[in-house]
Length: 253
Length: 324
Image (cartoon, rainbow over all chains, first blue to last red; front, side, top):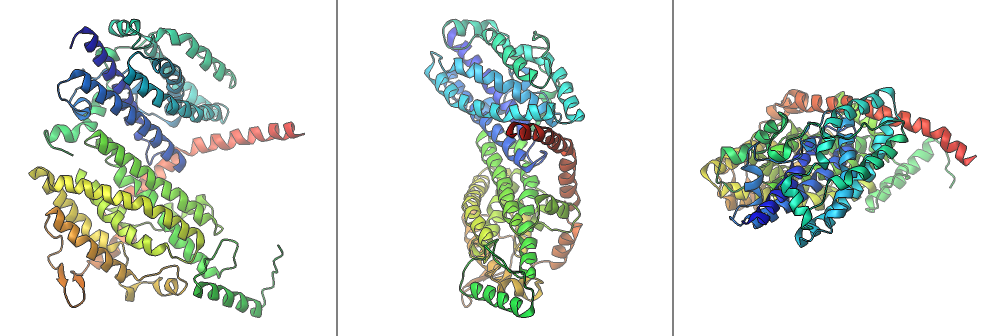
């Protein structure tokens, strides 16, 4: 692979990792949600992200050209090789945390995928065009949840505020550009994340205002996901996710 | 529409006669129709048990979602468990047409007044178990549900028609998973055999006791809530499944499974009815775990439901003001 291809490969793997890790977290709600309807809905969102991960991994494998498959990429890389942004891997905590993270990410992806769907890379543009429809729908679902929890009881508001505080450390990384991503953005293949930050902030702030909540300043705080420096949580997730592939290498499932 | 509330004996007898005539004419009973109290109760018991089974069944299958060995399998399993939850939701709604609420049904489940399919009190211990559940458990469920498409209660019948389509799909996916394992490495084949051995008998138990020992069968057959007997349905399942085991190249889970030319059916060994009784009465391997899981999820979610109620209550006066 030349430098451009290497950057493209890293980019695709990064987006796939973001999706698979969040999908895994959302799927943990299945049979544990506060309503049966939410078991179904959260599984549905998990399926959407799983679908994205598969498309990005498959394309990454093609770009790499070594005959690896989506499963090789998902199941045979370790924690240091996973490059998802950290916000995706945080444990589900409670329903308030899960929905607030989802709201933040839904707002982010609606804006990010909008730009990514204009990518010079036809395949990336096509994936983004499919994914943005899902994210728009996800946002329609996460917004009423944030309103209901923020304006429900004292307890539900408090849980939202606790979640907001924890997530605050991890938002900045969404808008951080690595060198290789900048190079791709200059070529019209990826998106300048920094350019979305102000829009994201304004949207979230405006939405929070309805419930008298304030958004803290968005700055780069905890980071390292794109370099494979994770929270302690990812290793446990991967040891669970990859167990069968690791225990019985070379088998077809 | 006017309804008389004359409960004189004559009137009741006439209504009962009309009801039974409808059943005899293969007409569906609809929620607004008069029905005997025992018919209503019997249906609530059976339909809510069916709904609970779908919901509790999410646990043993959900047990492998985060450990699915490929992305494709993970997508299939996640979608399947989601389907089961959807069936639960659909069936709860259908049961509500009989004048009971979902929260009353959930309370009956959590206080052990209502049952769910005993099969889900067995653990899923290996990945092959996910194949076995789809193939055998959904397979057995379909045999029963195809028969129930002709049940006399309209909403239940329509639910079954819809649910059967998805269940058939699940069964094929489960079988395909088993096939991949049975034709795979020695370790995979062993997992497949072990899963078949463990799930075979509990799957046969899903059809319930022998007809002669079934508490609800006679009345349910008379009212056409049930259309075929437990033993007939069980035989159908055995007959369709044995050739599928042969295709997998696995050993028969019951050495007495033999084709009986004269009967035109497979003969099989006797079910361990003591085990059946134990599991039904709450002493199976996972009975406690399943209910505890359900209760914990319900209790953990209480603050969310409370927040929703509080939010709605606050919205209501505003909405009233807007109207005014």
